[in-house]
Length: 220
Ligand code: G3P
Image 1: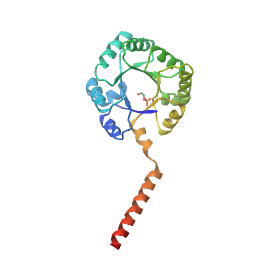
Image 2: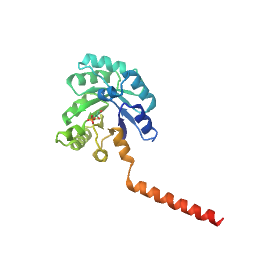
Image 3: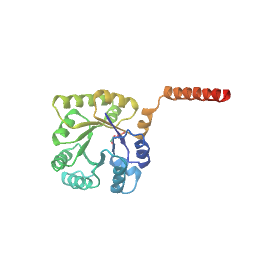
Image 4: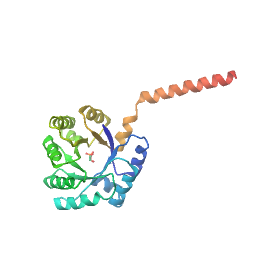
């Protein structure tokens, strides 16, 4: 499973990118607006930092506008990917952009049927939002499991990108469900690496090492 960061914050991207485990970035209009500045310059900067795909979302609601925006976004960088919403207009735009060789991440997916439509429209990625389903008492993980299974049964090539991840347990569960990619906020990425036994173990190893070094140097 590939690991993406769900942010448009340059400092967060640079920090996690240094770990050598970051495979891509997803942004959305809310995340971009939070950072301020010019959308195009921000996306271009993110694309220059990260090797993998960087999703940038269209804001038109009609097919024609989405296609126009998508064609423009696709020229910003080699690794940019257009993000379209899972609406009839978004599916139509996805189909047109895909026929032109432009990769699309279809976002705001909340059901298996929507995911099938995204795949049939030619989406490269489909993004089911599991946290927002959990928020309304539905089972977000179950949705990921079901989409993965349906895509396997019907040999649909669209990658399942688990989005709207809220905590580290979500990551383990979507990995077990067979998601191709998980995109998560900076906070969750940081939570993945920490374990109290790792910290305690390292402290004990270093304390033993330093004690032994003191003992050797006092014998010399
Ligand atoms: O980028 C889309 C998605 O990950 C949003 O997450 O936490 O706003 O539901 P959230």
